[in-house]
Image 1 (cartoon, rainbow, N blue to C red):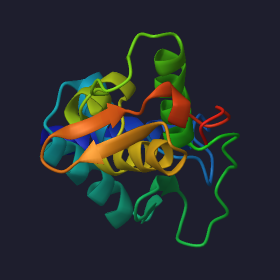
Image 2 (cartoon, rainbow, N blue to C red):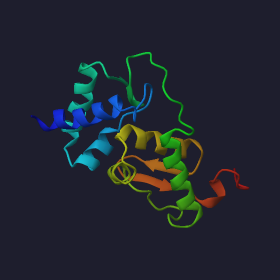
Image 3 (tube, helix red, strand yellow):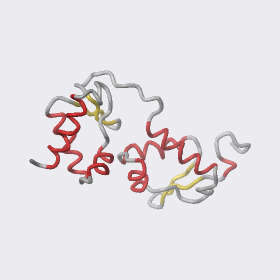
Length: 155
């Protein structure tokens, strides 16, 4: 049996046992990749297999959820990208990532937080919109100087 079908069966079992309920997100591609030591393309096939079985639906940029399209999604207290952004803010405030230094890159954050690239990009955009970071095209994203941080005298 192909690996993607084996992993899809594991997720289907979680749904059937009630561990994952209608509206709950299934593990992200990055989480499946990490937890089952599979390639990203295999993780994508897992979601496709579950969609083909009518067990889940995907919302572009948000994830794959148990149930058919239109099933109300379980509320998340704080969106995952905001949790990631808050973690980066805490590192900045603690001096772990100083001003004018790069924050971790996309691939590093994808591995660290077990999320897809789109989620990392949402977190970085959230940080940028609030003035914590600035992006230099083709170079990276850097911490702004403390006088530009939200709530500082300079802003």
